[in-house]
Amino acid sequence: MRRGLMSWSHPEMPPERLQARVSEAQAWMAEHGVSALLAHTSIAQPSVVHWLTHFTPYWSEAMMVVWPTGAPTLLASLTKRVHPWMREVGLMGELIMAPRLGEQTAQHLLGRLGPSARIAMVGLNDLPWSVAQPLRHHAPGLQWIDASDGFAALRRASDAAELGLLAQASAKAQMALQATPAGVSNAAQATAAIEHHARLAGAEEVMLRIAPNLSQPSAWLRVDGDMPLAPRYAVELSLAYKGAWVRWVRNFSADAPPSDWAQAQAWWQQQMATPAPNAHQMAAPPVGRLQHGRIELCQGGLPLTPVMDTHANPSPLPLGARWGVTSAQLRLPSGDWFAAQPVQWAHAVGTPI
Image (tube, rainbow, N blue to C red):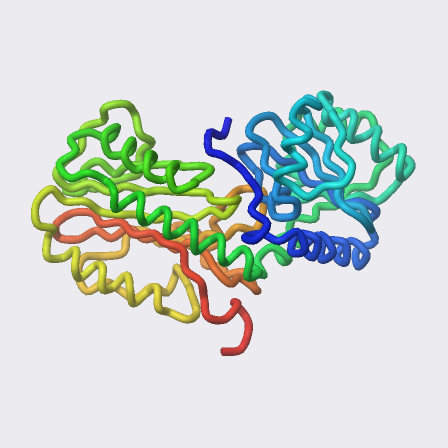
């Protein structure tokens, strides 16, 4: 269950912008000859439905149906008691209570489109079995296509409203990390302070991981109670504001930071200024070695999806991307050093510079 306050600020995300996104999805539907476009939403995979409607469930799940014209329908396994709130925070047409989400989605599609309509689903192969099985069982004649790639292409072309929210989310994340008190001895003290400041700043969701001892080979760990911290440690903060997700990392040292940290930071700033991002072509750091590099985009149900990773086979960055989260791990003479931050590229990937 989400814990942060979720609201809809029309100046930050105008309804007209959401309507334009739905129109873009409807144009894709017409091009591909489908009668409806569906997307499932939950606290684990909220991003598709949020991008089109601004709605994210605090708990439970829902199914969005985009029709060839008009506003999307939302079938939600939530009581009618919360329907007024749902309309306050999201742009939607018909709102249907659907505790049997898969079965009732099937019945709704059959009643409106007939038994053999062509339907597109974003994340078709990721649909939970508890929804997919009754959906297939009660509507066996529907023809399904996976719309994940088509939606990703629409989603990557970030508009000004989204970029504005990302900038705010980024500022809130940096502020929260800077509020970490000096001299903390365990992970709970550090993360409590970070989450406190992030929530006060309006963050809807906060996810934290710790590398508790940078003097030795390190990996990110979920915070577990009073996990002790070494004099040098790192914190990774993933934060959502109005559905916009960012990720930042900060390295901490109880004493003067090792001299190679400054060299690593200068190298990192050079990588962030690169106009054509490529995790596989990061320059060699002046000291130590690159242990891991990665680029993530928001293009599907997950808030951030890895699209380029030095631990995987090289692949080009998807066309049209205007921003992403880049992260790196260096192994320095003094130990490990981490970095991550969102980057807006001056030109969308694949466009002439």
